[in-house]
Image (tube, rainbow, N blue to C red; front, side, top):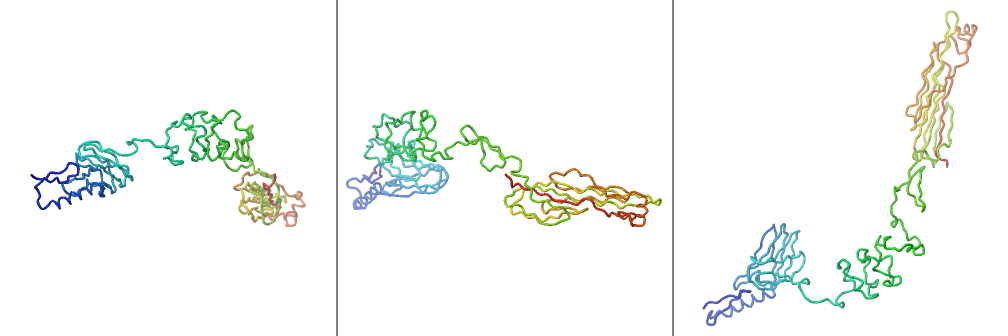
Length: 439
């Protein structure tokens, strides 16, 4: 009668009188199969996309489904299913050592839903021939005594909301050294559940309280008095933000509430301390202006010289035609923000001369008057913050009589009458500087 094979481990079951002379070899093979079933290890790669990997259990031969410990390896790019033949009743230790964010399911080939193996962990399981079951704390019976729990082992993350009620706690059973820092949050406490009789003197320290954990609803009216606050205990991080934007304000408008807090701030438009005179020069002149070290803004008044007066002409009949007045010089105000150190050369024009300060501005002199009595054009102040209206032109003294006219015809009268040239200037230029160094 031929041999048969066991259902679970596929061992060869020999019949008396059969396999004469080979019992020793077949027995050794059976022992190796038993050894693989109770102590064998094998790594199985399941790398790749979604697929099913079938482990086998061959009659009387070493097989990967017979091993006690099976480790699944490889980078997976899809969900994986690993099967064993139906009907095998066996205990397994399985390790999921794959990489990739996908699942690995261990099941029978055609029965049951199997179990999911957590990546990076060992899983104990057994099969009853049609379904695979996980063996862990979720399926085992028994209790865990307090002596088996290490100090601080049960953290707030391990407790369901409201799982530990006051009825479960003996008086003073939960001491400060049993609590991890910030472990007891407001969400874990019923309203008024922690009474003063449950708290040892000085047991609640600042290190035990999460930021903003003690809200106004947890405090009795007037519960926090000045005597309860350490010096400098209320820092900027404990204060709610106001509508004030952090920054530096000049010439500011400040709003203060009844508690003395600043609730509004904005910069003004005027220059702080502006209007301190520091330089006044009449032309013609040159020099260098150096700003005071504390100045950050200056106001500069620049005035150019007036144009020369036109020359007088004498007619054939001895009458005199006086030359026209020269145009007034340009006159402007320059408002300038400066960066220290600030030092710039300047030049103040005399009559008919321009006035300038480097990196500030230049005002132009008026043009000369005409010999026939026409007035010269006024000067300009390009780029000025404010260009002033022209001041009145000033005419020179005139030799207004026939003797003067006759003498002028020969070039000896006042103003060189008869030359027809522009030869008399009236108004020189000037510079006036103020700084924001006042209080």
